[in-house]
Length: 132
Ligand code: HEC
Image 1 (cartoon, rainbow, N blue to C red):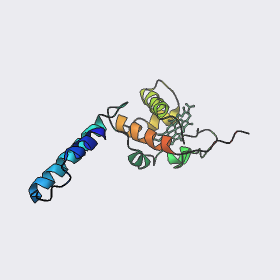
Image 2 (image 1 turned 30 degrees about the horizontal axis):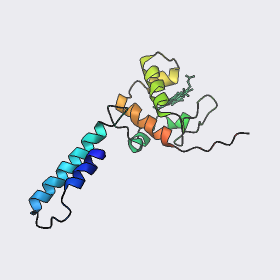
Image 3 (image 1 turned 60 degrees about the horizontal axis):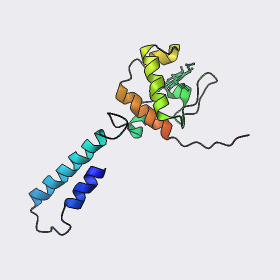
Image 4 (image 1 turned 45 degrees about the vertical axis):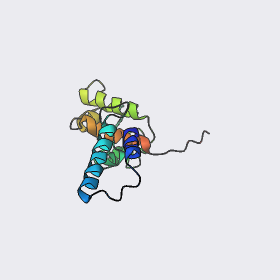
């Protein structure tokens, strides 16, 4: 984001004389820059996308819910869970380091991008905590 803002600041504010073609080129450059700086965001190589994650949890909903609240007594809640923890858990199920029959099966087909997106989605669900 910083990079694209800096680039935007560099664009002269009063440039009505720019020919159409040039304006389009400038916009393309900015869009590319934005996408690129997103990839270079701190913490992860790929940008995690919560909205994409929401589309990838069809197989998870029966147990963990679309809202991340467990739908049966054996499954844990995932809503509001720490993002990095969710990724780590899925990686461990996929590799077999952590064992649970259902989880070992459902994580088999998840890519690292899928796991990042799913973790972004579940962790972004806001929860209220009211201690007893
Ligand atoms: C059949 C029910 C079921 C389905 C479907 C399922 N899970 Fe799970 N999930 C569980 C259970 C049970 C556990 C706890 C397993 C254990 O004891 O390690 C778990 C644990 C997890 C954990 C670790 C939570 C923690 O607190 O350590 C994550 C993350 C997770 N599931 C994500 C997913 C995702 C993502 C999907 C879909 C791709 C999915 N699950 C589908 C039942 C399910």
